[in-house]
Length: 340
Image 1: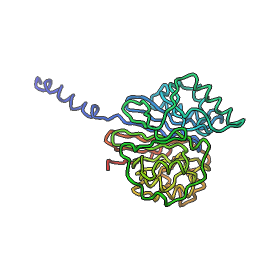
Image 2: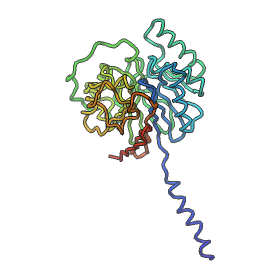
Image 3: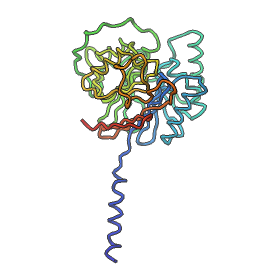
Image 4: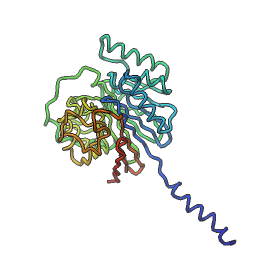
């Protein structure tokens, strides 16, 4: 009996080993805001950054979905809110969100370049909310101060990084193979784009950065490099996402913030699907515009039916070794991506 008591501490230590070995993950919540964007990032230390807030109105639908995701992740506030650009499907939900959960620091490219009655009212509503917190207006090359995670700004206010980031710098053989588009002088081209790095893992979010601006990032040299996950630019609209850029990023996984009838175009889907090394495309909605051949299989689509819309999202959990799991929160289907 005495020898059994002597063994108890050792047995207890063995029992606790799995708990100590459990790794804290970097979690991404891709929230369904019906064709806008809202991506919540929660670091292993519990800090948070939200990229965009979806639409206003609809009885606070998007703000409510964001708050539900935040509370589900154990958050009581949003530490950083990054607004990629001042379009209604990205910034419109800010006042409603701020009324429901505290926001610490606002990050954006400064002031809207689009003007008119609606555009000015939209920006003014945001600016009034922004004035109640801290504010960062980053330049390309700056980093957002999240602990344990690198969030590097690649584009902001129409400007882009001039030198390659770590992992970038290779010549892009696709440059010149596609024609440039008409110069975009609107808000999309002002998008704050970021590269998020956690250990060996790299995710790219360029907001709604348009065709020419994306090309500038990868020509004649790919200043971004290859990524594990490509958060599809512009909801999968064909105003962005040239093969010159997407194939240079060579993502293993693409995640598309599309709506049933917004984004998810055939052209964008085919560019992503044909990208070298791609394994899967995940979508928030089955895209009506894509048809049967230009949508991911149902298990990779959070909201398969257009109506009724469950508002389901997608979650991604990343481990420090670069492996990650993506989960369809609509069906519960998960897929593990091991270290390559």
